[in-house]
Length: 189
Image (cartoon, rainbow, N blue to C red; front, side, top):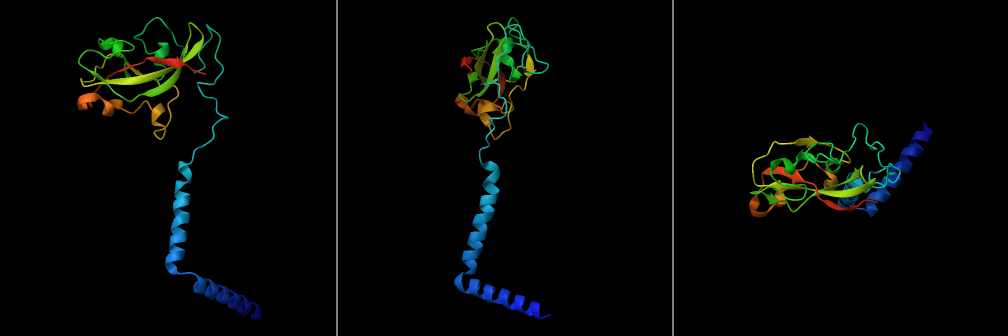
């Protein structure tokens, strides 16, 4: 019983000493800072060098199957979803709607923003960066819909997000999605 009184006295003295040297506002401010810091931890960058990415993965030999399970790229039918440039397209191929791999169909405007992916070309055995760009301003074409998800990342990395409609950056407020082009930006890796 005597030990409880000493402990109580010690805690009381420490509490009074802390209370005499700090204010409630200061303590609440420090607590708020700690809580804000804890809330920002998920936003910190994560080192994912251990993860194999498309751009720095070993490039297969020409004629070898694609590193992606179930996706074998081809290079002869531009309008097919397994065409090598369409490895991460999520939408309609513009070549089916009067456009091409690099230009929008007449009556549409090119969005200023894009998402990027690294796609493997089976003909030359190289991987290339593709900058997918939406063509906007006309109703959805509905022709050649492809929903490939190679390299798709969550929304907090929008430059790799193919689920976003990028028409918000199109000229003349043309916010309606029509189709997607897939020009080559350069060699990957």
